[in-house]
Image 1 (cartoon, rainbow, N blue to C red):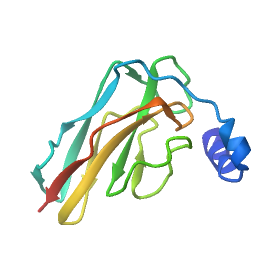
Image 2 (cartoon, one colour):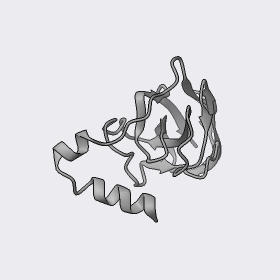
Image 3 (tube, one colour):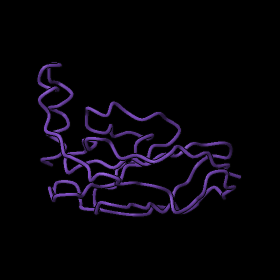
Length: 139
């Protein structure tokens, strides 16, 4: 509940207050990537996505531990504003319990996927740690 209240308050802040949001440093050379599926993969309507992370660890949202964050999966969208908490909607899936995989159900066709690591408050690290955007085909 604290995290939700925090996020709601952020979206009602003035631009100056947003500039004062706390930031968390990423570990130099850290990387987030897709274990599966790979770019160009053809998958069924329901498929498993596995997240990889090098150079940092995974911790649940709300747990501020050095050199950690939690995953966000961006579906058919561009990276969000990296100065704000990651949005909570159908295109931005949060894995705040520290999950490193999920099962997705997508409509047939071409889709893009991208991973973004964020800190305990859902704010991307500095510098941001995100994967290359991949395209998959859902049959």
